[in-house]
Length: 167
Image (cartoon, rainbow, N blue to C red; front, top):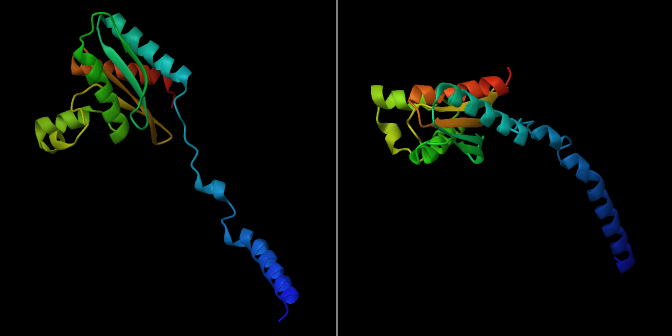
């Protein structure tokens, strides 16, 4: 076989391989991607504002944390005279609610009523006051509140979510 003929055959094989490439690759790569809602900066500000208003109306000095779905902090406010410890607790409540997709009260109740296993799970805060933000069946973030009673903390978080996230 001559070198010229070999080069021609190689070029034809390469061209055929290139033409076959679209057939071998997925046609609708975009179909593999999910459309996911996310909290905007405006939504985070509105959540914090509503939570602050609810807490102030009731005279509760709290810390309020808002996280994304991964539990990473998006916004935070510590009201005047809120305890220093409430800062980390509010963030922990929000992270737990976001990462596990459930209110933190679920874990507080489980420890009080039937099992201590959640005490061994790193990063889980087993105190009421953290609520996930769920839109379209998916967790998009969470609100964690600390500084009042656990039920009051949850009341502040719930008021913020209800005022900003419409079903």
